[in-house]
Length: 159
Image (cartoon, rainbow, N blue to C red):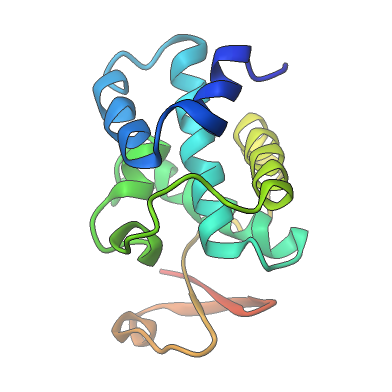
């Protein structure tokens, strides 16, 4: 299933990311049709791009796993965009980088991985993992979670 033409234009040129996120929150209660799926995949791709674009495919899929595991958890919102844009959950959402992705190849890769992950979340690695961080930081919450895996520059945890 290809992303519709309007979706490619939305994701690549037409709307800045902050506007896309706002549009997602307006449309998410509807939760139906291609527009909803396209927004969800777009939010997942943004999270992969900004959190792991320099990582291997495994590292990027692990970030997708964390995001989609949170959607399935009762502790987090029940849709991808709400999980990604939940305050203080992913560092990039609080920074002033909410612009169109600048690295076209990395963006296309993130979008392809997000599409695959969204369609087949059961095929993702790291079941039950809901947290990760870069090696160079030590968040306060690590002492409350169980380290599950280390992939690239990130450590992944389950509660």
